[in-house]
Length: 205
Image (tube, rainbow, N blue to C red):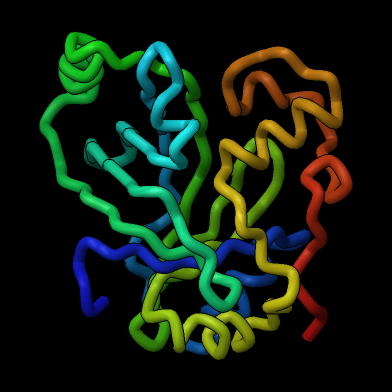
């Protein structure tokens, strides 16, 4: 990307993530990161300043540990773009305690399995979450639509919402009261596109 601190991405809800992965493999997309479990913690002030302003302070653990800050996002041509500052830290629990010592608190935990491919200079993330499967594509704004169309994703079905926002939609639709987007909380749930307020983007090939 031209600006290492600028994140531009688009997200799609899909019905068959395995089929999308097979399509990427047929196109000889490069596997950057095999399927990996992620745990993400979002922090905020006690008054909820970050969430109110659309900002994100996140600690993520997968094969490494990353601390991330994101500015409020802007919607441009169907994609979300915003400043992102991210760096690796050595210890998840110590980083959590450090952030809490500064006065921030965990407001949301979410987990997923992510597989990452590279195609035409963009990163394509295949996300399996407790509320369904999604494809995120991150790259230059003018390349996102043609890259999305290669594995058969419908650009008009792009989801301009974070996983936190999607989780809140599901909780409202289902009358759920728990805080976290965990596989344990959703182990017996069958989440639909109506619950998510979106539609599937994968088209038959």
